[in-house]
Every structure is written in C-alpha cells, then in structure tokens.
Image (cartoon, rainbow, N blue to C red; front, side, top):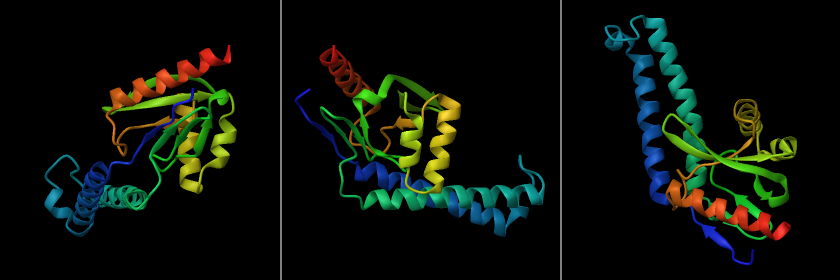
Length: 180
C-alpha cells in the first residue's frame, strides 16, 4: 500500500455533539434541582429522578470534556497508510494500530451507532497505550464485550460510516494481499 489516506476530524459533527452534551447536562441539572416536575412520569420517585440527574451530569459532562478537547485537536482523525491505521477519532484512540496486529475487521451496531471493530491478537498492547484511567477502562470493557479493545466510529470524522467501512476494509484487504 503506497497511498496515504487522511480523514480529517469534522468540526461540524463535533459541535453537534457538544450541543447534545450541553443539553443533557442541563437536563440532568434540572432533574437534580427540580425533581418534583418529573415525578408524574416514568421515573416517579424523587430519589430516582435525582440519581438519574446525577448520572446524566457525570456521564455527559465527561463526554463533553473529551469532545471539547477533540474540537481543538489539529491532528487528522484517521490516517491509513502502509504501517496501519492511525486513529485519533475518539477518547479511546491509541494512535497507530499496526496492520500485523489486526486479525479481523467487522462492523457492530449498538443503539444505532455503527462501529468498526478491529480485532487484534495483542489486546493488552493497545489497552496499555490508552491515555488515562477512563479510556483504559473503556477499552477493557470493549474487549470484554466485543472481543477487541479497538473500535473506530465515524461520528467525529469527515466521512460517513459506509465510506469509512469501505475505505478501511479495502486497505486491510490490500495489505493482507501484499503480505502473502
């Protein structure tokens, strides 16, 4: 593989994610401060509403921190070249994923979000490379749940998922053919 494919981060997609996180953090704060407004609905009880509010603030607040950092990231979101795939698309990105470490690539859909799962025979190598305790824990959870710590999504990239999937699979298959 001689061609280098560079897929930039999408500032528009990232801004939409930031707005979504702000909305959910705000809603969580409203749950905490005004639980009685929501007591007639599904949640019903004040402690449940307050707990849901705290969970929303913590989860989406953490997401907001990672996404805002990504907004100011000047690096490409994904680079595909003769060495492998350099991923910088999300909070659990670990940089270069060498072609020789990838054993299989397949698509997985979770709550209408499709992702590429890059299976590897060296999962611990990539988990150890994770930056921070939260990213490391997320990668371990991915490994336990999906068989690989490495996943790539298009939600921060200037490419739709179908094109991302096609591009990555073509590059992977091309590399496999060059190996033999």
